[in-house]
Length: 117
Image 1: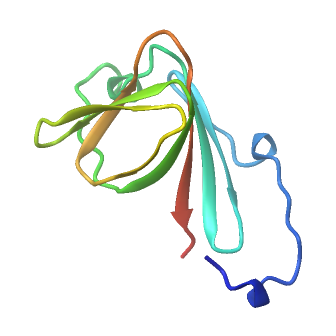
Image 2: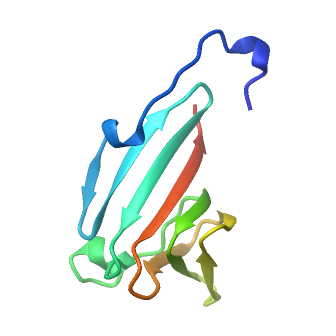
């Protein structure tokens, strides 16, 4: 996190106004702050890793993610076969080698925090 002496102005941005990206069954919006990019993903109940790969079996994502689930539940499978669910109110660090999907009939909303380069 940035040292408070390094920040010289207040920046407030609505995610809904910044860098929208449409997905097969959802959307993302992101904003860059002083030392972190924040992305909000909103994914419909039918979203799964395959939804954004034209129905083909999705490859495992090879990036790590730090997330906070705002609503809904994220189903997750690691490339070693481990499966888990991450529910609303939980923060998680997800390692490379995973794929995910929404669980149940509730929309999934999570925030991802990515250190700026």
